[in-house]
Length: 361
Ligand SMILES: [Zn+2]
Image 1: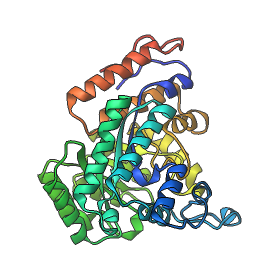
Image 2 (image 1 turned 90 degrees about the vertical axis):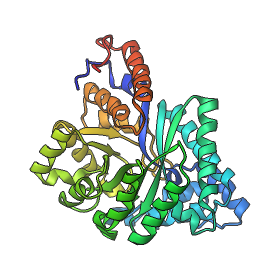
Image 3 (image 1 turned 60 degrees about the vertical axis):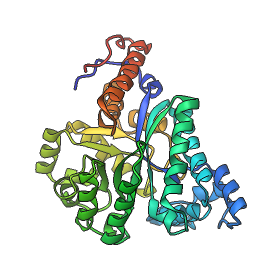
Image 4 (image 1 turned 120 degrees about the vertical axis):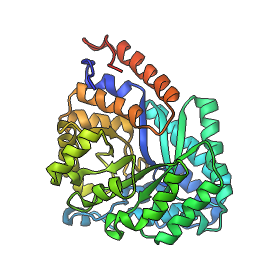
């Protein structure tokens, strides 16, 4: 893919963009969490905004001095404790889409949700998915933003619960639910444990993505996700840089990697920046995403700003990353083409010196 030179990095930040890797529970506004907690009678360990500022996984020795820290997984469990009604989920989806549009001009999001976290709190899957889809539809109707949903398997669960979750998803098909994902810390279990769940999703035409190459060195998990889970995309993937042959393969196969500079582990940010820049320079297809935007916090716009300011990516590279988001989205070709058209029109209209030619198709 060749992109003509756009203007300064700020022009790329303003372009219509995608966010393909957002966890719904990581995108909850602190004020909304405070509301839901109050209504549910849940006592938060700290006021919501403060709790978010103390969310961190595997803090460094320096960071430990500024603790206490609440692990990401624990904070997501607390947020899930405050959710009991489809309307709560509609609100969370709507607000996540509204925030993405307002802060970053995100016109298309793929939001990941965890059916089992709600099932364990007594919510029926139909109620969960109805609430989520209502939020997607309201945002499309009122804000003009598009979204699709990804049902995520938690790695800490068993292969059996993962398969039965996917079975439930296929029993209640919704146009908005387009795929499945695999979440959680990679140390909790290898991707191949979930081969049956992913095979079931594949059989029913659901797209597949998975967190891999984020926490565990080497390329094994990325390779398993491609070869055994038949993933269409990889979330993160940084550790594949440990294996040159795997980098070559992913470049040749045009695999898309959903990267994020800010989230997961604060102490790892400099390493992440170097990894993402290396992936781009190696010719891999990278997208930039917000991941858990409320908890860390970040936005897609700030991810692009970090790319320009701290990670040394050129405006041309950033425009290519923005376009990759539309290419990698789990949508039909006519939706993809119309989204790409609005991207190219905005790129042509950007005020930068050489921003008049748009991108190649
Ligand atoms: Zn993630």
